Image (cartoon, rainbow, N blue to C red; front, side, top):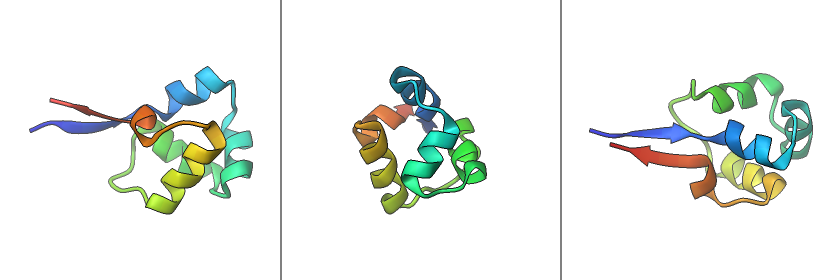
Length: 68
């Protein structure tokens, strides 16, 4: 069975955006965004994903990757 890998760190680096700046734009705490960034979560709300995509001007597929 495969797994979903979070690539938020890569997208943030491409956009040259810090965790603090993203946190302010998205309205999610640094701690929770850090957990998303490091992949230490088991779920993410669509509203959070939408806000991240809006702030980073990206698609969900840029952040989420499926690997076998």
